[in-house]
Image (cartoon, rainbow over all chains, first blue to last red; front, side, top):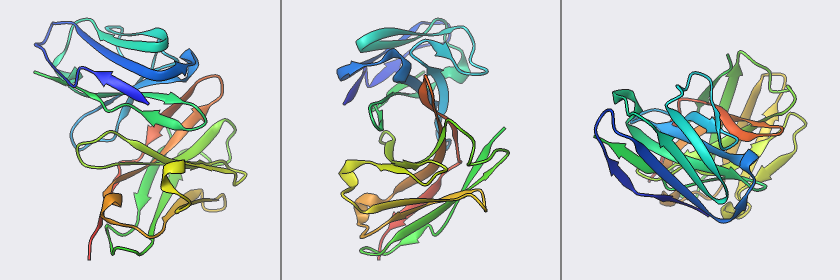
Length: 104
Length: 121
């Protein structure tokens, strides 16, 4: 089970966002990913392998963590960064967290 | 760049079978290290992985779906499909087909646009 916190982050453009993902059991760093989803769209890969940015993702996005605690940090929020973020782990199957909504 | 497109009925009656097809373009379903997945997302909730198929036909399913799922691949058509039997209102969701990369890293790298399926009489 993946537990994401907080449920909602109310922030302004230019501020820093820190999103948490906690696993009920240890997760390999190679198997932890993050996705961004906007209304009416499919999720979009943001980070894989805990700290590897997906193609086209700017360097204001940083992933970190190990074991059961993982973090996605957005250093300076841009208007296009707002949306819902999901963490994902793989243990014989894919599991997703409940999401953190980053809202203005 | 690979593209995935879901197709199928948007309305299914309770107790019937939900059947969806995913057509893959810009890449082959037979390519190594890629798996082909079905994922669903009820309104306002996080994604739920349903299962996946490899080009060889081998599959893995979410145990929570209790044997109601069948995923097949058709390499001649570059498609894969989902069958979910004995549906109830709880199966109403946006259904996505997606490609996963499973080598050293495991993640979903491409998603279809999704198809909304409602279970209702």
